[in-house]
Image 1 (cartoon, rainbow, N blue to C red):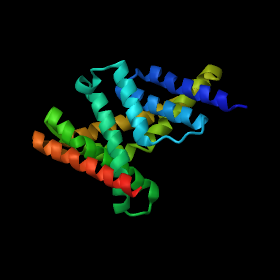
Image 2 (image 1 turned 45 degrees about the vertical axis):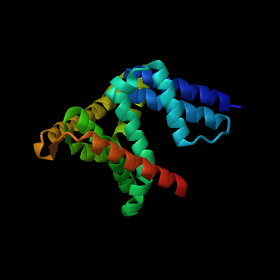
Image 3 (image 1 turned 180 degrees about the vertical axis):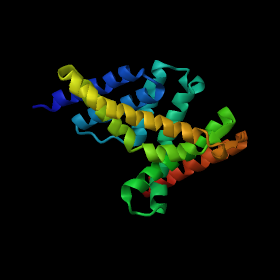
Amino acid sequence: KWAWASLVISLVMVWCFVALTGGSASIIRAAIMASVFLIAGYYGRPVSIFVCISITAVLTLAINPVAVAEDVGWQLSFLSLSGIVVLEPVIRKLLPTKPTAVFEMIAVTLSAQIATVPYIMSMFGKYSAVAIVANTVLMPIIPLLMLAGIIMALLGLAIPNSSYMLGRFFYKAIEYIFDFLKYLQSQRLLSVDSVPSMAFLIAWYTLIVIVGVIVGVIV
């Protein structure tokens, strides 16, 4: 009886989050994908991740047709997502099995970096390897802080004083995260300055596509 209501509530929460965060390309992409999976789940229809990525790309380009050529955030969002889908299963098999959660995060981070680094370097002429460290360390922390922030916001409506005291703890945690990121940013030794050639980019992404085809055939 509550399946329809839970679908509606979930969709409302997803798109309220989009409005709250300003609706960047990556957020809208994630929201559309979440909506597709939620709706498909409600109707009991399995959805291929590649189909979902394609639908999301079409819908986001319908909203902003020039994103594919002008919006670097849109480009990197889909590149990183595609890299995770294609490369993460392969990288995961090459890493140790224990501890599972740690190496899963490393596999996700590496797959996203492999898919985006050449393009980042072609656009900006440099790349900082601190992204790998930062993503691996912060990936499990950020969702917890986001959930805590939502809970604090809701508590603030009922018990402002208590939520304020608890909120100060999470505010401090966020400050420490930014200090950690600033420290990593200052490590110039991890920065690489280079602009890959067009031939290299074509070869690199062709190889990723080939891996994707092989993984798809195996699966």
